Image: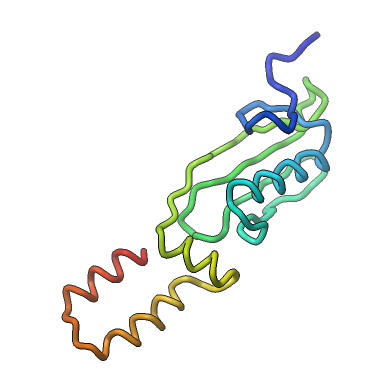
Length: 135
């Protein structure tokens, strides 16, 4: 019997219900996706990495909802995407800092930048605007 869900191939985008032969193929697909869409492997983290369950999150921003979860489907007898949130809510400064300085907490960089600029007496409204942009 043929499944109504697509079997992963290099030409397909991730979708809810997509099937993978095994965890190795799923991890390989995640790494390929990361190189093409996120530009660096450092921004993804395998939260769960078990034979029958894999959960991956985007970690460049703690507020980013991007995640994907695949687990073993006894009906299809292979790994299947059960959860896929394909949205990024990352601010421009987070992405810029993570491109230039990977593995650095963006708020620490922002504090350093603000400390350098605060000596210029730019006013309280500037400070509020700066921290709104950084969030």
